[in-house]
Image (cartoon, rainbow, N blue to C red):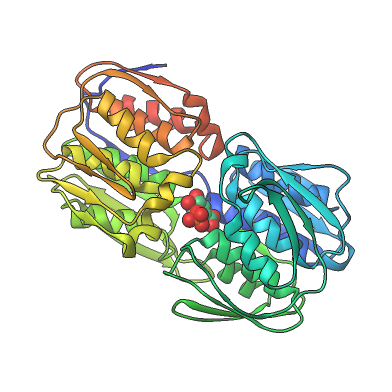
Length: 425
Ligand code: S3P
């Protein structure tokens, strides 16, 4: 697909697609509670289809499905069924990792697999702490999927996580619900807490003290969850508004979860005008974000703030090329084990567009004050790389050929509808 530079500014508003992380949890957690759970405004995308496949294979029925409403009926955790086939988690790390914890107490065998990318992603990070609780879970050499989980009785106790990952933390919390005693989990750094919030709303006993979470075993109740907009999907438009002079954008109805807004806070640090308006505080903080263009300057990003903007770091690289002064990102080695190696994908692609950018083991550094040129870029099967490159094309000096744009189906199937709408306004 060929994309041409824009010579407009961006003025307008957007309600981004519904949040991917919250939709995954809404779907998967329905299996825990006997009865009918509802998801309002779910994200309907390839990634969340993987979570739907998981629960349907476990005997949960999708009894109503409209564009704005999914209604799920579970027989209850004790009466889930043994899947008769291998479950395909497609491209979704969230589906696979959360499901391992969900299955911890099920007295049957489940096999989880996925696409070529997912089968290369690290799963030892969930397998090792789950095994330490006595759960029988195996994978291929080196801790890769397919994974085989034989759930059953297991211990609580203490679990110290070795990576800062909401997916791993969530798997452990879910395993704690079916353990024989409370489980205390120590996180390395605070990460998004959608799991804690939703399970609490379902009646689970979960106590959180900064990076320590204690979950008591016990049943939970069905729920209705209203999914807010996805701040990670909205970030593409916020970046665009920060690149095109005199732009102003209102992002409406997004999750303002403290573990998700690091990108917007960094944008503010880089000089953009950013205002948050909280409309609802619980169970999830939800509100609007206003972004106004202003000249950007380079920044330093280190490990402490990485979990709060992990999915937005490719966009930071693009913004940094435009900013005044240099930017250095470190402590972001996790990017190498996402849907693709996002450090390599970001640096190679931006270099193809003429950007001076250097790759490091755990990050990158970007020279500021650059003008991108046209060229050929590749999504590498990664939705977030594809969207970042489509935004990069708007400020290039010539046409950009984007290969593999279809990867956007993972989290933002309507990306180009919104892209052309903003281009025309
Ligand atoms: C997610 C957590 C993050 C993030 C991913 C979604 C979640 O992954 O990159 O897109 O929903 O919990 P890690 O937990 O592996 O950092």
